[in-house]
Amino acid sequence: MTNWITRLNATEHSQKYDAIQIVSENVANSAKELGFQELNLTGYANLNNNVSRRNNMREAVLSVIQPGDLVVVQFPMWMHLNFQAEFFDSIKNIESVRMISLIQDIPTWMFTKGNDYDRDNDFWLNQLKKFDLIVVANEKMANKLREDGVIVPMVTMGIWDYIYQGPRKDKLFKKKLYYVGGRDIVDIDYTCSTPLHFYNKNTEKKVLDCGSVTWNGRKPSDEIVAEIDGGFGIVVSDNIKEKSNMNFVYYNQFNNPTKLSLYLAAGIPLIVSSKTPHAALVKEHGIGLVVDDLNDIDQMLATMTALDYQKLINRVIPWQKAVCEGYFVKRALMAMIRYVDLGIEDDLVG
Image 1 (cartoon, one colour):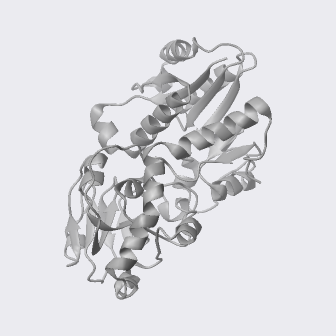
Image 2: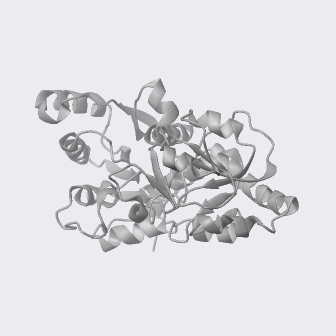
């Protein structure tokens, strides 16, 4: 029996910058350390209307799978919808193969304005119902999936890993904030004096006109990790408006942002909203601040000392080590194996 993990291949450029590629690569690399083999996928233009190309690609990728194997699919596949549906059905048609979903994102929730979608007929939710087990981001995601009718055994990831063994700067007590993003910053509600540094594609002039904002441009993620020298990493904030047709105010209640793990890899404390799944983790382990309005940050940092900050840094260090070594993916995959191979349900959600 062989354990397989899908991996979406990309250009060197996208692997440096794109959160999807970072996650896909890190997940696959951690899985390989547990003995998994890769199923490599590459996107093609016009795949949706090219039946023969879809069939050839699917057969080429899945020809190595044998009866009794286990296949973990990073979901969604970020390829054309009909290819994804056919890919899943082909796996399920192989005798005694177990098919597991490891969720990166759920597009239904990313684009909804709330609960305005047809749960019974939604493409993505119905795709998830095909799996034997789902590795979800966190318990809030698991509960929401069940509410939406996806009644499949689930184990949680907790947070993403960020595999990194490169250089880092010493962390000094600096009252400043970082926000790392992949989209343009188009507006901001921020009146504080605490410096706010953006790493992203573009930041509108009216945002930069806010005197405390600095735009550092877009850089490869590892370079950002290497140059951060203190301060706090903003994971989610309603004060920052990005150019997107996605509803991140809603979706951030359920997902695991890649930037959270990037900040931990850099070794700095987090700033999260109370609505996010990670607010309880930040409070319980003392690895950051829960802030719903960034305009409160001056007051929150006013009495913080260098010693207070060092205590935060010290509590971050074990989490830094964990994300940089692939702990969370490996833990989730081992929990999955315990269930599908041995029937042990201790790690299941609920």
